[in-house]
Length: 111
Length: 112
Image: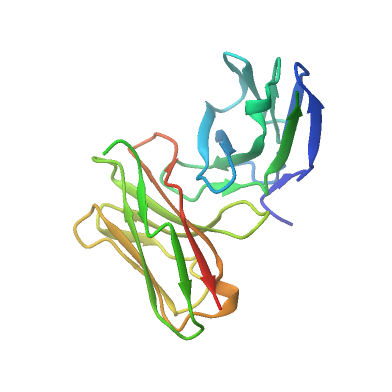
């Protein structure tokens, strides 16, 4: 079993839709959670960074962490064609240690 | 610098050749990571440096892979006697203390 599980999609939504992306994990020691966006032939770009449980909002993006269920989510409101990319979740027990990544979910927002 | 810089962006090597991939981290970032990303997959950990010390190399797939960061800034990932299964994107990331990882755009290695 992988440390982090993420549905690879692909996910296709119309412009303006609310998108929900999710990851589950098995290691209860994880306490740092990140979401990255990766465009084709580019490196991952940090979107959201949260510590422990709770919600964090930044513009159209909301990250949720439920440590009791070992489940994290990223919500994108009013999705735009420019949001079309692969979204990677990542997590770590300690920022000095390994960061474990999901396989990524491919998202297409149709104009 | 403004971001993590990796060179070359693309590398084609014949099977059996040695390659060297370079990473310039963000200035002042003490931690440096190398990841390997296969097509359609998430990044997989290779190795981690704190300053010049290589603290974890558990992800290196074989002894053909070697990484160094002699002065605690620029790092080089070397792959000896490349094989076709080494074809992937090699990502470098850096971080400062408790900050999350900041990635470069990677080096796409194709072994023919």
